[in-house]
Length: 331
Ligand code: NAI
Ligand code: MG
Image 1 (cartoon, rainbow, N blue to C red):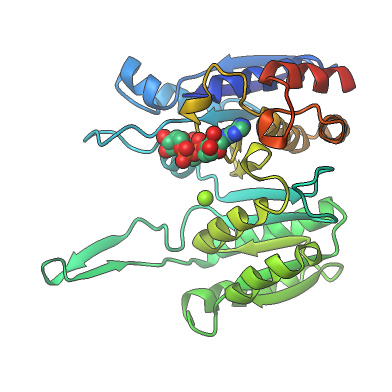
Image 2: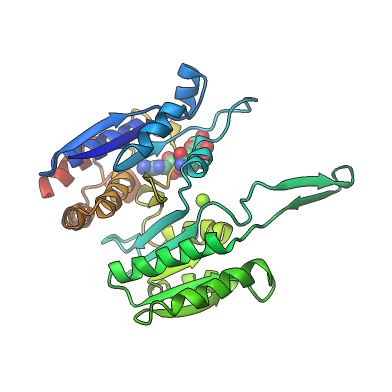
C-alpha cells in the first residue's frame, strides 16, 4: 500500500489530477490517496496558499502528485507555494525528461533527462539594490554540498536507466568561482562512476547543440537558472507543454507535476491534455520502484498519441476524460 498525496490546486489542476487518480486506480496496486490544498483557491479558503498541514502530509507520504496553481494579481501576503514547497521540503533535484513521442510535432530519437539544481544558484533569493536603485545585485550561490548531491543524482540516474553519458553544463570560463566549484565537484564525482562518460559543455554551446542535435544528450546536469532555460527549450522538440512533465526530488519527499500552469481558459472545456500529468505519474511510479508499471503507462500513452487519441493541442478531438479512458483501456 502506497500513500500518495494529491495536490489538485487551481484551474485545470483538479482535472488532470483526477485523470492521474483514475489511471493509478486502474493498476493492480493498492493506494491510499490524501487530497491537500495548495494555491490561490486554498489561500481564499484558509488564508495560506500552502498550509503547514499540506507540507506535513507531503513529508508523510511515499510520493506526491501536484496539478498546477494560479498566480493571483498582487496580494501583499501571498507567496509562491511552488517555490516555498521546494524550499521547505529541500527538493533539490528537478528532473525534466524529454522523450520523443510518435507525433508529427516531435523530433525523433530524443530520450534525455535534464537534471537541474533546484535550491541555489541565481535563485538564491539574495538580492539588493544600491545607489538609490541605480544598481541591482543578485548573488549566485553555489555550494559544494549542493553541487555534490545534484551531480551524484545525475550519475546515479544514468546508471539506473542504462545510459552511458552525462553532460555537465556550466560557464566556468567566465563564472570562474561559482561554475568553477560546480565543475571541480563534477570532475571529482565522475571518478566514482568509471562506467559513465562525463562530457563538459559550456551552457551557450549546449543551447546551440540542443537545437542542432538533441539526440546526442542522455543526461544533462546543471545549475538552477541554466537548467530552467534549457529544459523549457528541450520540451519544445517533443510536443510542448501538453506533454512536458517534471519531478522534484529531495531526501525525504518527492513531488511530481506537469510543467504547464493552471490554464484558466481551458477550465471546464475538456481540452486540458492530461498526458503531461500522466507522464509525471509514470515518473512517480519509477520513483517508488514500480518500474514495470511506469513502462506500461508510458507505452499506453505513446500508443494513444500514435493513434491520434489526443486532445486538440496535439491535433486530436478527444476530451480530458476520453483520453484518460483510452489510456486505461490500453493498460
Ligand atoms: P499555462 O501553462 O497555464 O498555459 C500556457 C499555454 O499552454 C496556454 O495556451 C494553455 O492553454 C496551454 N496549456 C497549458 N496546459 C495545457 C494542457 N494540459 N493541455 C493543453 N494546453 C495546455 O501558462 P500561463 O497561461 O502562462 O499561466 C496560467 C496560470 O498558471 C498563471 O496564473 C501562472 O502563474 C500559472 N502557472 C503555474 C505553474 C505551476 O503551477 N507550476 C507553472 C506555470 C504557470
Ligand atoms: Mg521554467
